[in-house]
Length: 385
Image (cartoon, rainbow, N blue to C red; front, side):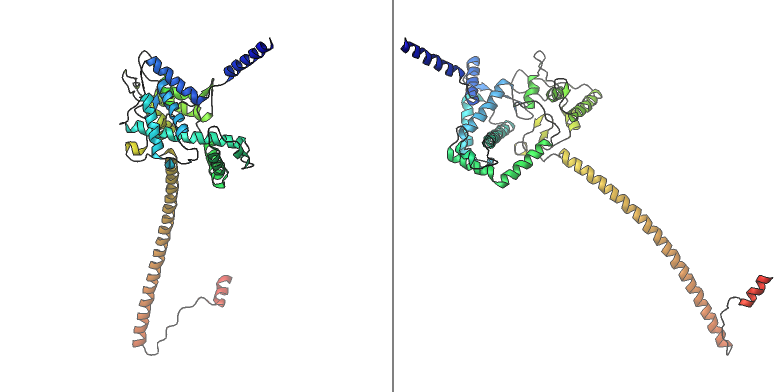
């Protein structure tokens, strides 16, 4: 009985531990992909991409992005803090492992550029997760304390090196600056881990295949319940809707039965209202880098704002210079008039001197006595009269 009881307790305890064990996110990603493969009855999944941005769309696209994050964590060294330091062999491993489960266009520079950016993002997010673990262990107060408890699946020696990296003053300064800059963002949507592009394609009309307006998606992501997340988003949405109402109806992009999809409508209106930015559509997402598409950098909204401010300052300075030039011109006219008067007086004086010289020549002993004013007696007589 006792043996049976112990056996039952152990069995039920093991079963409870097994049921209570939570599958980690890394493990669940591979499970989802395997389920998709069985459902599609295929060896590899075909990934669809937005032709404008190169971002993956659909459920397969989400699994594709998640797989990249998983492979990066399994392949890259946690001590790597810059993308330039990642060995090319590690990057090749990522592509090799993706090729085992997915089909994607290797000859499409825009798509390949986006995949590289996803790897960079995965590396940053992994480092951020490790830094949060470092902070939780009191690394900001005592840099030695977190070294005793490495982050999951990180070698203790590599973890110590990361702790020293997080603790250095230069990194603290950069982190504080980045944190301050993030708080200045006027737009913070609720798209979660999915890209805005993916949200747009999730709203495709299943009957017509038309994509929704990016303005409607903007409202969906920046509203929580019936309230806007901030006034800035509400003002920009009103401006976009008014501009859209004043323009002809634009035909919507549609998802073709083939592979790629068209650009959604109203994207130009959103860019005009939110402002341009180099290699980025505000409210829609990042664009392919120049090394993938070529061309020159677009003017950012910030630089446009600075240019407008500079233009205002230059215009004000020009007005001040014009006003000073008018004053100088008036003073020059006055000086010219005074110079002309002085020249006329000099001419009259010279003529007088010539006459006096002639009189002295013909009249011996001639002395010119300049006229004087009236005497005091004469003035008194005049006043008495």
